[in-house]
Image 1 (tube, one colour):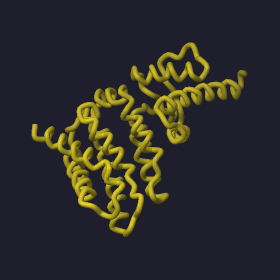
Image 2 (image 1 turned 60 degrees about the vertical axis):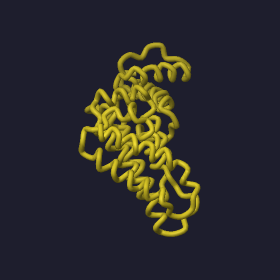
Image 3 (image 1 turned 30 degrees about the vertical axis):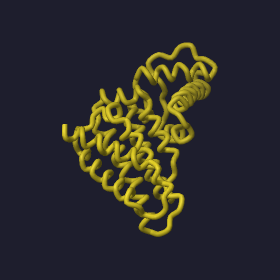
Image 4 (image 1 turned 135 degrees about the horizontal axis):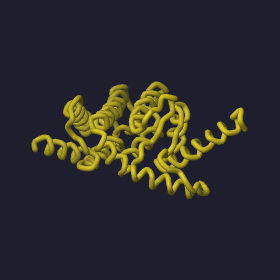
Length: 229
């Protein structure tokens, strides 16, 4: 009960400071956010608490994504610069902990909702203030995205059969011109193509429909290159 109340207070705190990016310099609200992020990270790090947090405390997830993309319009000194980086990186850590601490059933619920994966993709498309930070963001988010998939012995990635994803695939197939039958696999793509696919897509629907196209392209290439063709 105390933990639930604490998370509720954190969600309210995050919601209350969404507009502070328009302010200049280090403000008390920035320190409040930084402190709240540290407390949240300590609460969830290495524990199984906050399962289904995306459903029960949607404001926390959305605020964490907003904070993980936080940038100052004007950076006046190094302290402000490092504080904004710290806020982004701690928000990223919290998102990854929340995802990792959920069981497979809870992850399936989060994926079926599609909102969490959409936020992950949205995060992927946000660059940091340096190449090094952008690379860290990309690798962290890709790690989260890959954890949704099964990796085959051949090194390919396979989407599990989640109902909401299947529905999006059906819509994606229809948008792509129609493929009548596609049974158990949503799409298979290798590691490098997966990374490119996620980076180039702006929505989960694009990831899936583009992945479908890539899957059938691979089949076509394999048929064309087959010694029996």
